[in-house]
Image (cartoon, rainbow, N blue to C red; front, side, top):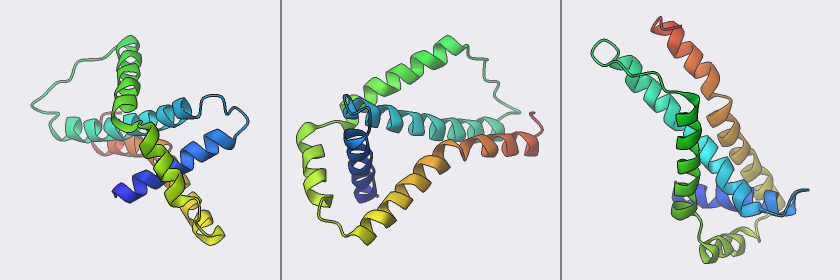
Amino acid sequence: MRQFYKYIIYRLYTWAKNGPSNSTPILNVLITLAFVHYMQLGIVLLIVGLSLRSSVHFPRIGPEYIVGFMFLLLIAHYFLFYNKERWASYEKEFKDESPEESRRGKIYVLVYLIGSTLGAIPLMLLLGKIFHTI
């Protein structure tokens, strides 16, 4: 799993660095990872909340707290994930991959990103309908 995360960081970083708005590739990677992890955390909290719903009542959270939490999550991602030397070593480690490995790796990363973000929305709706909360 650690190897896959190294590859995700490498792939996101190279896409951001070689893309049209390459002025802040580090920030682009950190925002992407923070958003994906925010969506994954939301799914976990939804499942826990639905399974404990009869005994625990979660208060409604205002949008300003959600935005604040997302900002704190972004800051945490900077300290947890970003290390200039380590990210440079990821580039060295994966730069010699074959075109077939590169294509397969891109597909895995895209499936992970799309599945973790866009896949979370239907899953939340489905869980809500199953537990009759929508």
